[in-house]
Image (cartoon, rainbow, N blue to C red; front, side, top):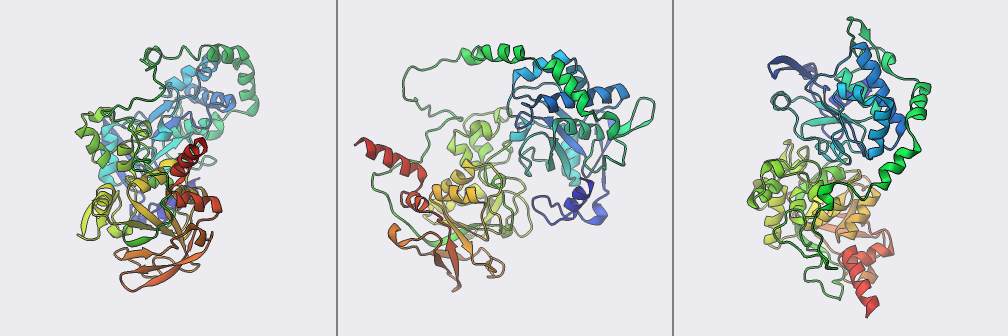
Length: 512
């Protein structure tokens, strides 16, 4: 872990790459935390969360975390007060067996109080970190860390200010919160000092399998599950008191900022539009390797200066009520504005600047990705994306494809794609193209300021999975690419303009 962390500090900017110069890697940011002197270093943990995403249905790891907490408390270890700690089980049963075991009090003592049930830190719902900590990170360009027992760890997903996000089991989340840093070798370096001043090591707080098994045996009882799930429909009184319309059809509320009638079927006809090429398209974004779906998809908190924030403010939503993209995924107006809004986005058109902006090629203006895309759409101009290898890796699936479609992107030209994201792009009517082996935007000297034309056959019957096409630019360059429609079914989706239209036409057709 420590070796990996130091490699990340050295690696070029990207996923698991922070490019911190050697002379700056030992930087110390001094700040005042509620009147107490404090320090931050690269790799210091500022968020430690046991979340519902992955592990909290496993009593062994949950109770294992509680045993770690107990041992740590008995030895006198503490979590630094500026580390935001939380426990969000996936089920009320977890609360029952933690209380039955008598161990919840030790988690509470370290700050891992139960904050709720369901998605929290993993989806970006960690909430704000203390302003003094946030300022120390921002003003000193610190690579702060989050450690969570979830299943998402991309930059900007967990929290805008935690660039290094590590996934760990619940017991390890507790251990790293106590250490206060990911820059540690647990086998050789102490976690901290106990109440007698003696150094405490990882081995001193780590429970044996037998210890954990005994607690599970005595504390996890069948009646807990029965009692919890028999009462599941009673739920939260606030939920049960909601007024539910009797209509079979949903009555769209035009004022809602959470749920909005989606535009997928606007002006749709029963006749499929057929295949379409791309003519004189501008490059909206020019990427390198390893752009993940978390760079693309709206996720996490809504930044106060983002297009989505501006939209919400204009619709009377206070900043404190912004909530997250995940909670507003039913409103395409918010989600389109949050596409490519990741604050760690690296776009070559910006020449070294990191952030969710791009250059509007016709005017040379630097705009948010959303504003640039809308300017192109308003002018009736197609856009494409240039990308490197592994485009679309990650697992934030649906909006990573829906969002680009809503921005008007017609094609993505990449060295390679993550397979599911490639298929999802087709499902949204976006053409995935692969450079030929040995080619990429750099070798072909494509700067992203060119205009791109992709000629496809006008009949779907003339398009074959995996065929080559020529991409031409307005600078007299042309190169061959492989069209990544990999199956006949994907060709059918593309012929219909996307999978949603394909399904609707088939449903209506089957009833006629």
